[in-house]
Image (cartoon, rainbow, N blue to C red; front, side, top):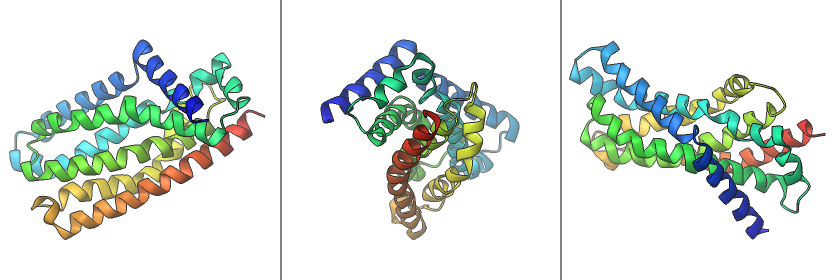
Length: 225
């Protein structure tokens, strides 16, 4: 079973590299949004530093939403999803492999790009470590919770917008605690508010690792009948 899981994960990673348009598109969208913000807000460096954590997280969240429809839709259209459901791998593990592949090809590149784009917003140096830790903890939750919305809309053409609307309320806690981890820690990890935000964000991420596969598998069963 583990060999089948790793084979499915490796397949998704190879397809993402060959076809492109997933992580690259998300990072490009992330870059565009962050590049336009200083033009809209103005040259006030103090104001940019104040809004930087929130703007980085909002742009990252929107970039992740942009790629949700590719979680299951392509496999559904070419019949691969039906073959996967008839295999020995449980549907919950299929959802885990898909969500993990989405994070590795979309969420992780966004986390890597975030510090570089933080320079454009004059993000304070002490905010980088907690922001990176929060994004590493929070972005898997975006992929696993997004798998529920992608599974619910798997049979709908151009269902990416509907999937985004469905999962957006579940993304709000990730956004709040992620911003709080970077915004409330003037002394890096030493701030009590920042540690609490990281702890709550970790709790949300752990819950998503359970609810995402269960909810995604239930939605796929309902749509593939």
